[in-house]
Image 1: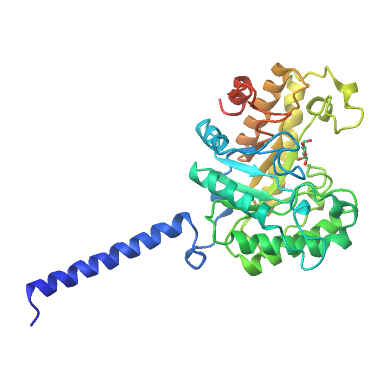
Image 2: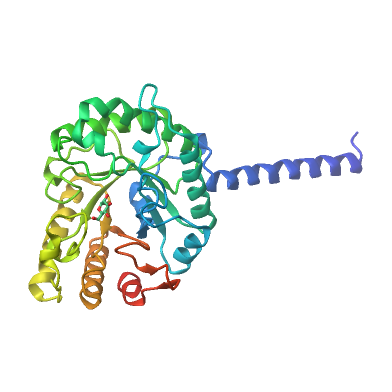
Length: 350
Ligand code: GLC
């Protein structure tokens, strides 16, 4: 017959076991233990991206710092405290990969991105990692395809055990020889490669022809993939948002272009966004406006009006959004004074 003492001991052991299980479960909620994660609902996932900011000009340069931004831990805290929910991290993987098979990614850059994910997690921000500025694939798609898929295989392997608030965006702004038709094939192959390794994380897919709305009707989303979000970029009117942009030919001719928020200016946005909405409803996919912003050469009151209008119209359509970008040429944050540009911040998060 068992003594009270041994019954107590059993009870204590049982409780410890139970508590251990509880811990294990709560652990898997934040740092995903793949087997235990149910298929994610992309509409729920998209809520995590509600108010995103692009960490532009940092890891999208060939070497971080060359475009003026080196990511710091306090940026993540500043961003979270301002009310943003996520960061999109454009990464130029093509500058950090072996040029021959098996196209191994350099461990230094992988660790740097891992560090970014850790900072974001620490401050409660979801993270999108993408492939940005893969210029070679836009020039010679067939030649670069294997490298492109090898990059995704390695990223999926590296990040598969991250929390479910990490998102994979397949490729930023496909264009030129990576035509809309080819892109439909490449994106499906990339999703297949990812899913062979990582069945959990939500993927984000955008349009060809520079990521805008024009190629939306040519885009074919993979039929068997439900855990995906559609993304598009919005910089219209381009003469306004890109006036004086050094990387856009003849854009100095547009200097002085204003955006007053007139009825016709607003309805241009409304009607384009409602087309996107309709397209997404027909396909039952959530929408993420992954980039929008007006360059600092435009006047501030116009930038404020435009930014506020685009963000509000996106929200009214149920789109999550990501402002382009944190602290460089379009920056909502001023690194020289370590302050937010309040007008722009309020335009984003009133
Ligand atoms: C694209 C480019 C980025 C540029 C932005 C605005 O995302 O990749 O370098 O700053 O568009 O033009």
